[in-house]
Structure formats: structure tokens, C-alpha cells
Image 1 (cartoon, each protein chain N blue to C red):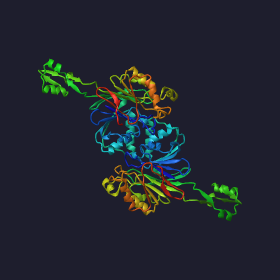
Image 2: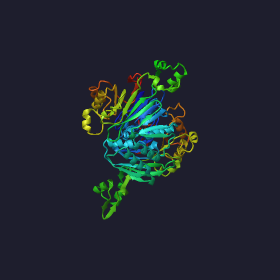
Image 3: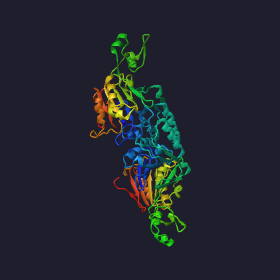
Image 4: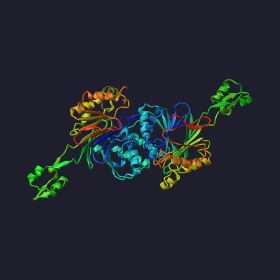
Length: 320
Length: 320
């Protein structure tokens, strides 16, 4: 599973950072998922190896424009590129009506079907290689986190158990290995009882705007990675007032409390500069988080790519 | 008057070219007008000296997404940047309803008033330094061209005429020069009868998607510059079929017929490459137009800036 950040700025784009968008790539093949789709997301995609034809689903965390204004253009471009595969969109209810209005006003008819799943109902959605679960957050608009858990983890047959049951080596073992249940000597045996996963399923949680990181305790069970906004440092958050966002220390303290191994912060207020010698800078956010978090901390930047391998090791992909 | 191209691709953005957007700058001060606002227009603005605070009006030529999907994000960013000046939007009727739906769905409330002018009524709109007129085009959706004519052209007093009428040099001359009418010796004299323009008012026509350039004959009277789409070359237009667009030769032949001094082609199908050694390239479009047009021909590229000086001379601004 790879994460590729398409936009890391809050509210408005800057010269260096686009508004919200993260691509989650499957570990095999070209399939990918787009979490949030701020204006210009399709432009960012042009500068990656991602193809709109291989996009499995778009998941919108909430209705604010910096998280969804890129949707109509990206869908239009997918159609103009000749996409025919159906596309799943998981988003708050308002998005569906808005997309329909947009299609009608701008005379856009897509060349593919869109299956709309309403995130307000906290759906679980299963794709071939990934299962998605939805969690409620706290923001000025209904906002959600999506958990992405690997399905079909590579597994080995439990040879000892097979021997114990007297199931003979041969085609029956093959069927069990492929996930099919079998009958033998008048008894039914379930495939899943004879498979041992070679590794723990990989799990990544990607959260929308949220001022209560604690709401993610359940979502983070079994997760190796959390991607969460850190719009401000604590001092700046106090100045900004109650705008429904988190600050670095708050998110980092939560990650520490649930012993999360990897935390990626993103969605930085445009006032934070990439240049660490200019104040305020994104380094200020890093420093604040580092003070309370002992896991691996990453600060997202546009086109940063991170990979989570089978063993659960999370690291930056070189050659960005 | 300056033209600065923010996007020059048709339908979808490419790595080198954004979708439609042209900035027209006033000759004095920082005021500017945005004609079409495809997705990512606000991102392009970030790479220019234009400020969203100095934007006088946005004029949309037609409802297709590559000409308007950047509107909500640009308005949101103007609001987040603290704009308070009212903004005029001239656009087909559908755009107003769509913007209202977008504002509602995405909880966007602007910090400034928007005055909406419906282009379907072919309005004339007067700004302090620029008068805009609207012309109907032919496309799959109602599409318009906007003519921008300079107001308040610098002028000198007609001294001979003043002497003839016996109006004495002094405060009365000053009032007439400032545009105020006067009374003298029981008679009323109009300022405009005593002013001689120092140059012809500058006029630029910017057209939306259109498959009948001839419709612009009236719009081009007195214009020094026409900006028009040339989505294809003639051969490619035949392959594309009836999609409501013009090809290079068609537009160039019209410009030649009305003796237009300067023609700028834009809105090239994404298949046309910037690299002249790759086929098809934008040079193919240039060559086709040059065969039938004897005026000054420009092929737009993103961030190309052109200036129309008082004498009507049109040229590329160096140091792009």
C-alpha cells in the first residue's frame, strides 16, 4: 500500500501546495483510491504515474470546497479519456445532489456509471483488494475518516492441522488454499480454518478535518498508519479560534496514547512555509508534534510518496 | 490593455496547458477582468502578479466545465484572502443557479457581494475604465464573445473651436477638459464637443467556443485584437465531426475578411503538442492560419502576455 500526497494545504492552494487530495495505491497492480479531491487534483495526477482509468473509488471526507471542488473536472476528464469502468464515490449526501446539479448545468454526461455511497451512514465498502470502513469525526460540517484494510493477505496452509484432520495432500489442499470450502469423508471443512496469514493485514486510516482526534480510537485499532490534519500549532490554533481544526500537539498526543506506529500530518494552514528559515514554517508543526509523539512522524508535502510493506514497515519512497 | 493567458487547452488540462482562462488588465492601475475560469485558474493566478483583490469582473463565455469549474474555488479564495469589494460576474443564467447550489452544499459564504449579469440578454456593462459588450456565438451550448472597449481615452481641448466660440482661456477650459459641461454667455456647451481623443479607443474581443467566426463581424468593428478558439486544424476538425468548434483556417479567413490587424488563437485540443517536432503540434495550427491571414498572428500559450498600446500597436511582453 502506497500513499501519494496530491495536496497538503488547508483552505486555499499556495504556489507550493495544492488543496486536499491523497492517493492510496494498492500493493499490486495499478488500482488506486482518491481521498478528497480539491480543485486541481486532476492537474496533480497528470504529474504522477496514476491513471484515471485505474481509479477504483473517490472518497470525500466532507463538503468543504477545498476537499471537493476538483470532483467535477476530474470526472469530466476521466470521461474524456474514455473511461468505461464504473466508479464508486463515497461522500456525504450533499455531494451527490451537487454533482447532479453540476452535470446538468454544464451539460456533462459521463461515459461510465457512478455508484454513490453515502458516508453519513458510516458504510463499509468492499473492493477486490481493499475493505473500507467509515468513522465519524468532529468539524463544522459532518466529516469522516476512512479506514483502508488490505483483503486477501497472502497465506499458507496449516499443514499440521490438515494432517490432524486426515485430509490428504492433493487437489483438496489446493482448493482450501484458493479459498474454497471442501467436503471430505462426509464432513465440511472451511478454507479459512486452514489458512495462516503470512502477515498482519495492512491498515491505513485517512481522516478528514477534525478537532477531536480521540474519535479515532476505534478506527486506529490494528492500523499501522494514521493520516490526520494538523492545520495549526497550538498557539496559532488559539488565535484562529474555534474553527473545527486540530493542532499538531493534539493529534500527536492522541497517536502516542493509542501507540500508533506511524503518523502523517497534512492540511497545513497556508501561512506555514516550506522554508524552515521563514516563520511560521511547517518545521514548527513538526517540532510541536515530536515533543509528545515517539512513533515515526511524517509531515506531508505535495508528491511525497510513502509505502507500507507487508511487514508493516512504513517509509518514504525515494526518487519523488 | 494587456492580455495574460492563464489556460490554453480545450476540454482537459495537460501538463503544459491549463483549461480556459484569460486575464485582461487595464492600462492603468491593477484592475483586471477574467474571461472564463476553468479549474485551476486560481492556481495559475498565483504564478502571476494579478491579485484577486483587484479583479473587477469575471466573464464566462459558456457553461461547459473547462470554462467554469474554477469559479467556486476562485471565489472562495478571494473571500479567504479578505476581499470586500463587490464583484461582477457576467455569465449564462445556468451559472448563477449552479453557484448558489455550490455555495449552499459546500457551506461557502463570501465576504463580498456578487453582482450577477446574465449574458443571455447580451448586456452592455460599464466599468470605470472599460465598457463591455456581449455578442452571440454558435456552439453546443449558448456561447458568447465579450468586447472590451477602453473608456476615458486621453484627450486634448480643441483650442481653435474654443476660440471660435469666444470661450476665454481659464477655469471654463479646465472644466471642459475634466468632462464637465459649462454655461457661458447664456449658452450651454458640452464638454464632449470640445475634446479631441489623443488616440482611437483600444478594443479587444474575446470569444468563447464557436463554430461560426462570421458571427463576430459586428463585434470586430473598431477592434484591434480578436482572441478566438482554434481547437483543430481543418483535417482534424473533419475527423472530430460536428462538435461546435472552429479550425484554424476558418478563423483566420474570417479575420482576413474583416481586415483585423491582430488575431490570437487559443483553446487547442490537448492532442496538439507544444514541441513542434511532435505531430500534431501547435505549429500545424499556426501554419494553417498563416496561409490565409496577413495580419499579426499569435498562438497563445499559458502565461503568454500581450500588450496593446495607445497607438494600437500589439506585441508580446518580454520576460514572461
